[in-house]
Image (cartoon, rainbow, N blue to C red):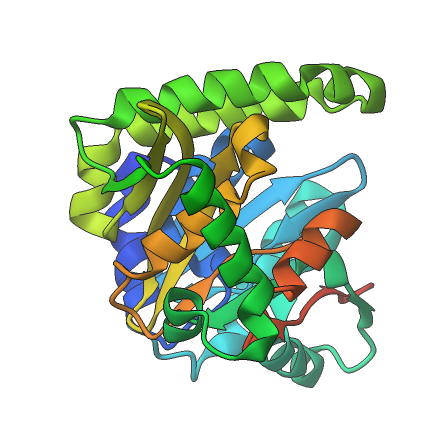
Length: 309
C-alpha cells in the first residue's frame, strides 16, 4: 500500500465512504480524518476500493477499521490481511483503535485470540437532534433554566450560523479561550495539545468553503453585549448524523449558560436525525456535561490487538 499524510486531497473519497454507510462513529468523519493529521501525524492509503488509516506511537502501529468506499464490507477479511502484512513490515505491534462493537466482533471472527480492551474515554455521545433543539421534559429543565438565565442577563444576545463573513469572530473567541486556559494547561502539561487544537481550528476556518462544499461543514456563533462569546463547528458525518467537532465559550459567559444556548440554537439548524457530540476523553467534567443532556446512546469503542499473526 502507498501511504501518505491525510490531506484535503482525500476529503472527497473519505466523505463518499462515510455517506455510503449508516455510520454513527466520529472516526468515520472525513473532516476529523483530515484535521487530526496535524495532531496524530496519521497516514492514509487507498487500495482496491478500501481506505486505510494509521498512526504510530513508540510501540504500536494503530489502524482504523478498514473503510469500504462503496460501503460493501463483505470482503473485510482480505482488507484486514492487507493491514497485517503492512504491520509486519513496520516491525511494531498491531492495534486496531477506535473500534465499535460490531467491528470488534468482525475482527474477533478473524482473530479469535485477540486481546480486546474497552476504551470508555473514546465512546461517542449520540443525541436525537429534536431533543437538543426542543429540550422538552423534566429531565432537561435545568438546561432550559440555564438558557433563561443567559437570556435574562443578556437580552440583546443573538445567534448566527457560520459563514465566510463571520469566521474572524471564531478566531477571536479561540484566541481568548486559549489565553484563559493557558495557566491550567501549563500546570498539567497540555499546552502543546491546546496549541495544536488552535492550529486545527484555524485550518478548518481557512478551508471552510471546501469543507462546507464537500462535507457540509457548518456551525454557529453566539453574540452577547455586541461581542462574540461562543462558537461551534460541525459537519455531516453520515446521512443521518451530524458531528460537532468543537464547541467553546469565553469563561465569563459560560458560567451564565452560554454553552447551553449555543448548543440549543445550533441544534435548531441541524437537518440530520442525530448529533454526535464526540467523546469525553476520560475527563470527568466533560463526561458529566455530556451525560446531563441524556444521550440516546454512548457508542462504545474498543482496541483490538491481534497478537502474533
